[in-house]
Image 1 (cartoon, rainbow, N blue to C red):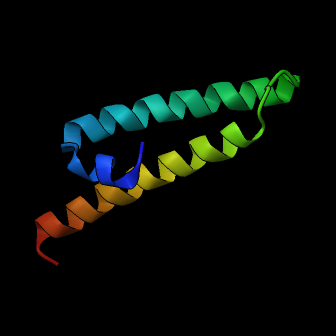
Image 2 (image 1 turned 30 degrees about the horizontal axis):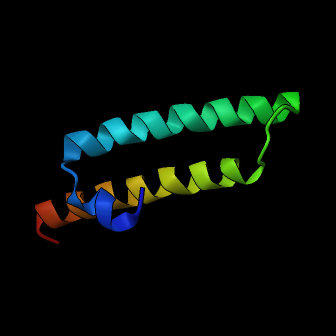
Length: 67
């Protein structure tokens, strides 16, 4: 998902998306270890998606606390 799309989601939906992205990353890492991954760049993309979601969750948390 793009960053704009992620920012539009609520906190609960972001947490669900984070869970799905982490599961996807775990699957890609397993495939990479076995040597069966078709596109190695998918691992990097999935890792960046997890980082994006965590960043947005932290931004919302800071904004909510008033800092």
